[in-house]
Length: 345
Image (cartoon, rainbow, N blue to C red; front, side, top):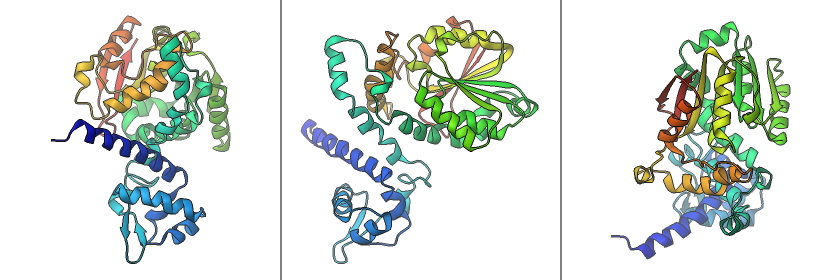
């Protein structure tokens, strides 16, 4: 049986490892090593165009963590194909990319400590690199499966999008979902709302670079949407629980949908009851992200502070209270982190 002291030592090591994994992603060291034969630290540094001394120390942490293999006689390092699948941009799922949340949240730790004492919250603008990291995370959980797996859970969605409908994404962030849909379905019109000027600029620039004429973005407080029965489909990817006034947002979403429309909401797969999350494989991580980001950005706006772990039970209740006549909850094989809610006006 592992003692509590041993568990704490394991936490120290793995917390430190998370930072090294994030560095490995940002410097593209994992991508570089995945394409190399066993190599010296100098060869790896040269190929990646990085400083050898830093690369060597980074390798030391990854070798002792048993992530990277090392041959003492030749002093050569290698990354197995099995591990590259989960640490590179070309792999099945890039956990090294997700590790960026650890340093991103650490940026605001001092502010969070102040909030514990004084209440209130930490606004979006104090989170460095938030939109960059969020866009990468969305690329993994949304973009790769959006057209083939996520959208098809809405009945006849492909036919509707091909014929030409109006689609809104609330809390669109850097707009990658909207831009992908606009590229895939040129006969439909797509718009993204987000209250971050930085996110809207990123989204607009990407749409321009892609030459899209059917995608647009607006800086908009989604609790103040005023589009009566205008949209055929409204989506929200991992954004409702961050809202200051989620009840108003959901009510406005319902009012903005045509009578035949559908609201597709992706949100964290969890229960509203703490005791039901005891066996959740990512519960400690998700509660941490919630405490240091999702909850606090809402509270910074004097909002509800739902947090990422608001859970299925509360989500369904709030959707029904917002006036949706029916709510279905779906699970998709590609995404163990989220539920997908289909709500009808």
